[in-house]
Figure 1 (cartoon, helix red, strand yellow):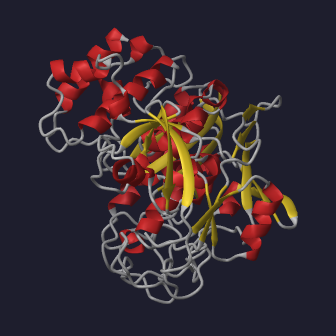
Figure 2 (cartoon, chains in turn blue, purple; figure 1 turned 30 degrees about the vertical axis):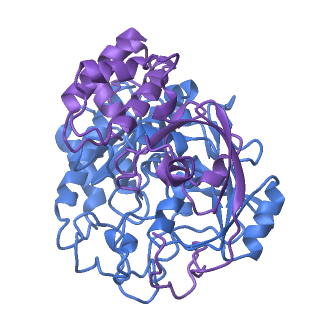
Figure 3 (tube, chains in turn yellow, purple; figure 1 turned 135 degrees about the vertical axis):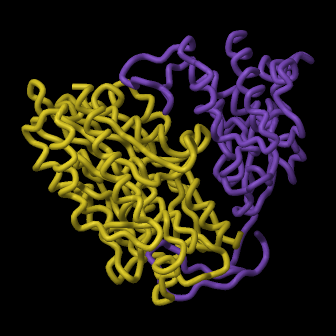
Length: 331
Length: 196
């Protein structure tokens, strides 16, 4: 690992000012992604600022309106185990528990989870193969290389990477908000706007600027929250990133779908909302498999698989279908 | 690690523009390790694992993948299982660390250690200290009612009685065993759970 200086932040305003002023400063919370990126020489900060001592940022609050406010420093396992998170939004608990390992979930923070960088092997490779995300302008080795794990939606010739966070998929489906504090004050970013598509600037994973720090994640009350499910398909049964995953949340009206929220992981540079499918699913019976399939298929018309990941188009539709069925069955 | 590798050029948004060989300063860290206070001086870049092994000479935590993939470096921080290879020693000033060397009490092995011996839960033994540290904390997590990815319905309370072999396999998935002693490891953890 390269050398750097280290200090501990005691004051939020000062931490934000330090980050805004120094382009070579990195915040560290759980460290499970940053330490790995530093070992692989992908991240080379000169100063590491430990934000774990900042006050009031680990709380998990069940709000009176039925929503949640989760502090950015809350650990994955603590959020997953929280009784109100489990009761109100099982999809959040499941997305956390299907990620990483017991040890990592004890370390990794909520803010860090949604900031984690792609697992694209070219991005993390120590041999400095072309990667526009790691070194802008160097090219994308995955575009015509090993791209079985890569995107089928929203990619560009500059970058075909996927976002690795499971939690992000659940938060996108629920239209959660990321509460960010910057030098100019606090603002709320809708989750679907928080992460971005690669375009020709894949070095930017999200819309945060220098000096921005995630304070909390707020999940508004959702009628679909209770009947929700996270389904993840991967090469290993446990401790593996998704090939394809779906967060589904469904409100039922008798045997019919009143409204559905669907987002997919493993298919794009950000969680991919299946908006066309969501609209088409309204009013459908959970038992009408053909109709459900057709509705979900509407969101795959614009799928653009790469040379090695064509299977994700079919797999994605099947995963989405089953996620809807399981979620709806919980209503 | 430690060697000079190609530098990264161009401005990236992820605070990455540092250069090798920059100024660094050793820092004092005081941790309670296996019950005794240890004051050490380390470089900020030293992982907790390297500090335990190379500074404090506690070689129970093993350095295998050093990338958070195998679990051999598992230790407890404030009673919670973590990967000591994926965190910096300087982040743990004032904290309580337990390694496998600290499990024994009054010359008696921990119940998980005894169960691993009885059920032959290892062959080469390289992953064993990580497996045991992970299992010790995992049983406490189950006692607290934490669900897992193997839990059918996370909205319902989880009790120790629900800790099936499938649950144990899922909860221990962060610890790899290249000798593939998994059946015996699951048996050992099951036995230890019943005793606790």
